[in-house]
Amino acid sequence: MTIEVNGKEVEFVEGETISQLIKRMNFVFPLIVVKIDGQLVKKPAFESTKFLDGASIQIIHLISGG
Image (cartoon, rainbow, N blue to C red; front, side, top):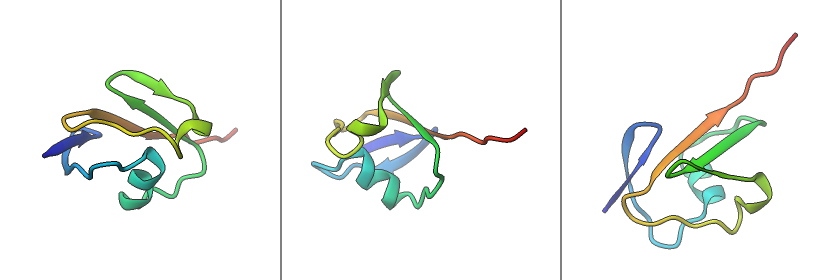
């Protein structure tokens, strides 16, 4: 059972939330945007949002500057 994270195949963990996946993938960026199967997930929902086996997830870190 797998999911796709940023185009790479990753093991699916039953019941894992977006926050847990971010931690498992070692993403430590302060500004992150997440989409599951093309649907935007708002940051307050990271702790409670789960995904299914086979999901396509995009985790994008934003860079600010001026």
